[in-house]
Length: 100
Image 1 (cartoon, rainbow, N blue to C red):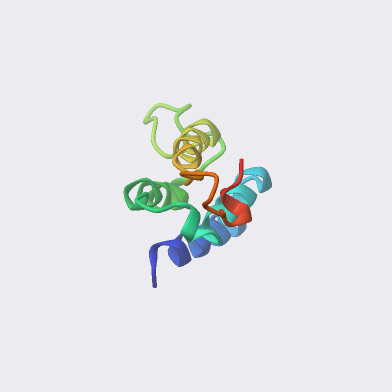
Image 2: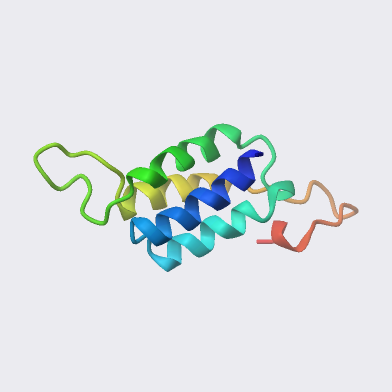
């Protein structure tokens, strides 16, 4: 299974089992469905995949400070989205997902 398929599966599972909010799931699924818009982002995607099973709305608030909450996951997602491929020139025709 490639990285983007794993991101899709991990997102769906986190949404079902860990109550991942829809607004985050939608953005993650958009990334998962657009691999051509996210070249050279394997490290960032893998970090997010690793966070999803540990997602908890109240993570980082208790004694142990474990897990990933909305803020942590959204920060990683923002960094990933910032690396979305942008047009290199006016001649290059981006896929619609690559448009800002």
